[in-house]
Picture 1 (cartoon, helix red, strand yellow):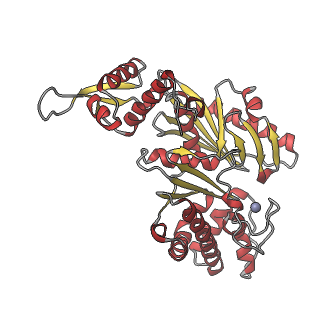
Picture 2: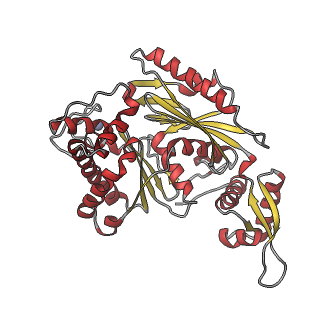
Picture 3: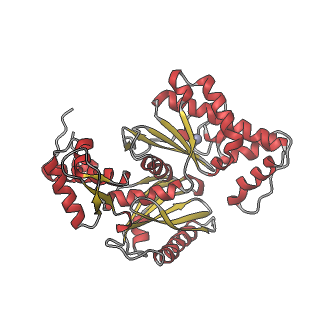
Length: 401
Ligand SMILES: [Zn+2]
């Protein structure tokens, strides 16, 4: 494979590499950057000087020397810019503001009223986003770059390049020019992505790019996966990569909303818990509000309700089967679990690990499996904005193969 990168793209890639390194390390020096990145000293000095002019980097004094001149220490100015991250689920949304490092400085949860009528629901969702953005904007301190953009994580199949929503399965919305509609109401640039991709980007960024391959599972009403492969979000030919919620884990299994039978998410998502409880002879949980389903189920399990504990265990076993399939196929460095189900980790994780030990092969048995950061999707949405704007990260267009 020949990779052709033009000179302007190369400069952008080098700048982005240096900026990432500075963001990931509290303090460093020009000489350290040159050593770590392999860029020559003159290039590093030029880039750092530019970044200082752009107020993205500051000199903060001298470090120690093992002989010769003491190096000037530099650090990333995390408060040079901010972004708004929004995670939209069916009946609620979380809005955060982060600085350029992804540290949360503001957070608010808000209900979205689900409405059967599509036009009404869409209009309501757009109104709520506008009002939440207006409120969040008030919390942003003065800074050189202000709010660089708004990242919105959506639970479905979306085109991150065009802002087009192909399908939001749980609300049955298809073919929506979301970006066009939202930018009529909000003047700040908006970027959208799938919620599992956003969660994966948060988890990957939080590890300071120390690993290359990470799978993030968003387990809520459905199951989606965000794949970081070789340090990049892997999207596949049509942007459909990561739909592991619809891999078959039971050949003669239950019918799924996608039309297939025996899909993973019928056995390991939030909605399967209610079925397990009923199958064990328990009453169907009566919940007035969808967003509190997991809290209610967890409360019962924590108070030793055996039916509920068994339901969590069953879910954990199926989750383990699905994760074993995924890690056997991709052999990642790490798997993270986010979404509502992650709150029940104490009941679920031991079962997942037990099943993984049986079903995963070789080193995959001991895969590093952790619960994701709270609000991973919202943080990831915000960081994706920062990376695309402030960091001007190289895009597919920069590299032709
Ligand atoms: Zn399915």
